[in-house]
Image 1 (spheres, one colour):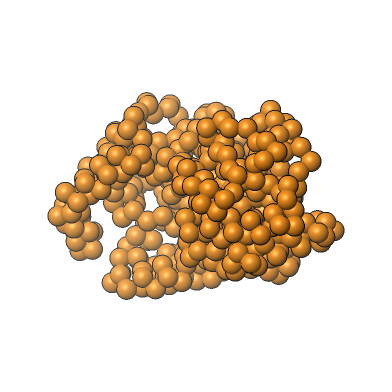
Image 2: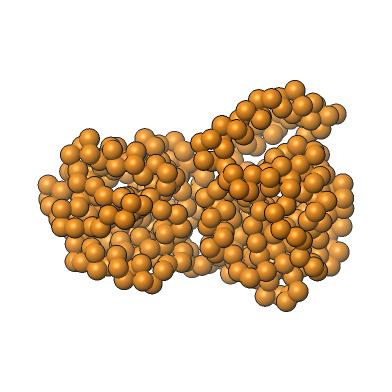
Length: 423
């Protein structure tokens, strides 16, 4: 009944959905060259042999899947992996980081005809859903074909939990399609069980198992030469609404450190010009990486509005503010900075990483800032006390030291499912 209602609403709302997709195309949020993939039409043939399909919503989830992909490919030389995501940024990052025998396609929109075209072509031997991305037709149609499905690194927030509790059993129908769910935390495991998942264990968070972000050695050498011996700090993966705080904090820091350089990496690179305009409004000398402008002695802010280079900028700075956390967007991944020896600052809004942040709190491995003033004060204090800065980075490094056991347990369960276990 719920699926009939869901698909009925999709049919009624088809004109709205079509207009929405056209707007996304016009805004550059969809890839025009690969848009047929969103309608379920593959852009490449299915490889011969075993094919594992991993679905990840966007950048964070797909990056978390990389250690899993490496482990699965190493275990079987004739195995291939299909990775689906829904965003252009994640597609570009996957294009650069996926190993041989792994490839990317855009996930089809959740309409029956698109889903069926997708499944008819790819015929996966196993489907792994990262975290908690729920597309009813994709789930039900996959299960209906007998494709074993596993939810890996599952996370259910309190808000999502309360919403699904009111779904009149729809959550049980969908979660019941998964033969196994590995949860990031015991709290998420309990929520999944209550919502109807039948086989759930807490394996821990796969994000702890990720490798450090990659870097182009030549780009790193060039940037180190450009910044020379200047002091600098990094604001990573920033969102609209918080760059004003960052720029105000930097302007205040310049009063004490006149040659200080701020590196700002917008979460969405296409916002580079917008962030640059904010800096100009505040009278700050700014350049953008995307237009090839070089850093010179007068540059006060460098906007790194490119894709896939965050590993470069974390390696340049010993102090990093993790974006999306001074505005209520849930925060970005703090583990990436912790793996690269950064002292971490973040705002109060880290809801997307609540379980991870609990580990940071237990180790006293990060500092919370609430506005431009506290951000400026925290950066200034860490710059003035190198020993304290290094200690904070060491504590953050301890938080990310684990992860191998989580990865091992997940790989073992996947192989079990492929062999016909957990029926």
